Amino acid sequence: MTTPRVIADRFDVVATRHRLRWLRWERSRNDRAYGEDDLWTTAVDRRTGDRVRVLERLPEEFWQWAASMWAEAVARHVVAAASPHTVPILHVGQGVVFAEPPPAVARPRLPPAQAAACALAACEVVARLHAIGCGGEGGRTAHGRLDFDMPMPIDFGRHNLRMTQRSGEWTIAWLVPSHRELADLDDAPPETDPDALARDLEDRIAGSVTDEAADLPPQYDPHSDPIAGDLARLAGFYLSLAPPARGQPAIVDAVRRLAAGEPVVRDVAGLARLLQGLAPAASDWDARIAALPVVDVLPLPALDWDRVIAAGEARLPELVPRQRAYVVLPLAVAYHRRATLRAAAAPTDALRDAGRAAELDPITPYHVTRAVLLDRLGRRDEARAAIALAFATPEWTSAPTVEVDEIRLLNAGEVVLGDRERARAHATRGTIALRDGDLALAENDLRRALDLDLTAAHAHALGAVLYAGGDLAGAAALEARAVELEPASARYRWDLVVSLHRLGRRDEALVHARELEALEAGDPNGRARRIRLLNGA
Image 1 (cartoon, rainbow, N blue to C red):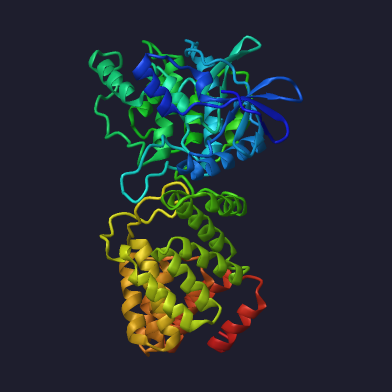
Image 2 (spheres, rainbow, N blue to C red):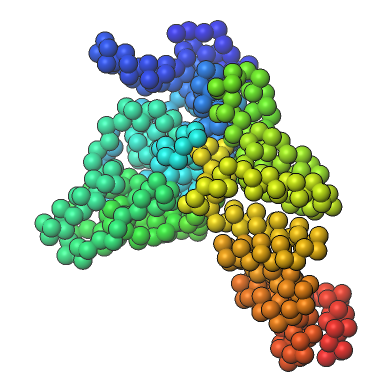
């Protein structure tokens, strides 16, 4: 299907991709096979005359808006990284424009050193993707409201993670962000499937290929632990290039166990250090591995929220009511994330963003953020009204089974409040009540917050309520707990010093004052404050 369309005044579109659902229907109806060309939008680069490939979401695929925003964010990261292991990206906007990738070929069988070099290249890509919150296998969520893709997954299939030869050596050319529909064309060999690897490992152990202990721990669930899943797939990628054989070093057995689900390492940098023992001796991998980020928990993604918000607001008027939720819900996430980033430096702007988030999607976390910001700005009546709305939302009565997934830009499922978000609401209402002088309500809410989420901030806030009510011993005990939970906080330790001093526990106060002096080294105001309190001691 040809269309007279140009992307970025540079790429002339010559064929628009077909929807995978339609291609599958055609195959079942007419036995029509389809290939990679059917799944790409193809264009020609006016500057070079070369064919390029465009990863784009068709306008009618409104449910993919959030995924496309995430894909473009990952693409900008890839451009900035300029990795030699990824397919070059020529343009980001209206989709992602890739240079023509090498053909998707079957995985070659390589000597261990060459396979390790390819796997290390893959580790280098994945470690940096994990650092920006990209990773995991993806899939669909099961908790209702709307099913969105999980945070941008990484596809390890041979149509995305491609093998190619440069100067006679095999290396990788990875499509990042992944073109997930290409996975439909993959005929993955068993050794790239972690589940098959686990069965193979058990068979090999039973067949005495290795004499190592045969008792494996429970496997990781790659859906609940994206980093563990990626580690298993990276290990599987190495094994697909250099299948295990008798007499190989112990490192290979460790890789096999990792592929089967054993937590041999916890992050990609650790796997790279393991594979380094198999890599060619004369290489520059020492410095490159040392530079890899160490990420054992996937962080929240840091997108360009200004860009996402502008794109979402522009898209909203085009949508009919039944389509709006697919943009409205993730757009609310974007506003809320920007509000949290602006809160300290520009609380008025942050309040505006939090208000728009709550307008688009009136859920508890957004109302709580509004209440916090209003209280900070001294607008107490409005803050009380906002926190009342937080406790009146339908999800407040839901069973607290999982943490609220704030990344509804990526996963706009049913909001089920977990203990941490419930604690945040109670702590906010309790803090407002403390400022109002309602110590009974404040204590009740802050005790509930501390029960739900034991943090230094909650212990300190409850201590402040008891201190205001004259219970100095109770306040000191909670302030000591806050210091124990967060020993580097000068604020918590100072309040403990004050309470201990008022209780006449001078020796204890002096101990903590000396600790405070180390924390506030070079701060003349802090020293003067301590001298005034402790009479120069």
